[in-house]
Image (cartoon, rainbow, N blue to C red; front, side, top):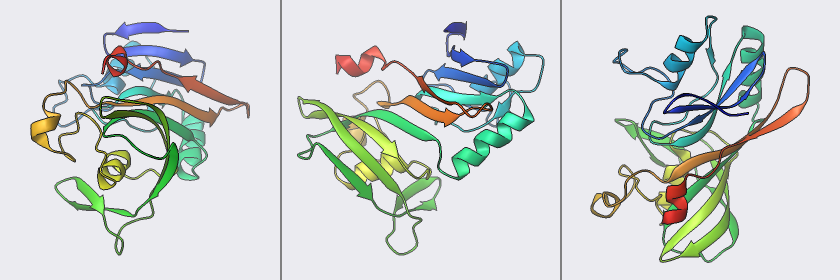
Length: 215
């Protein structure tokens, strides 16, 4: 099932408890300081008369699947799964350079260094693990499938930057002179797997934007 309610919001899945949205890049998941600017959450709240609960977030520059709950019971259930690392998330990322290994694990602790910038800190950082698989390589670019088993802020961006393969279009963790030539951050939440209220495990998928294939 797909239903467009706004140019930024396509509903991928909905039942009496959950809404899964296919988010475009360039719009916030939840309202920021300026409440007059729409977010995914505010657009959903305008559509539904009952309260829509925030479960998790995608950064403004990131596209892909994001979940919202329709009631408090489901909100609590999903939050528990996120906290206990029971939710499985996969991202597609286009990165600079070619990676020799077909798969690997980036295990580097991350902490905040100020002004929202995150970085690797072997002493004070929190444990952070990202698994990756190479999907395609060409023209000094690599398309990766990423599976973060922890959920640190900017984890994927920091981890890939730390191994010398920053995400294409990433202005915070990369060479701005190179990154500014790309129209967007090439990071997309491609699928998410979780348990619903009945106990059934479901997987919601979002198609890879055409721009990834173009590059």
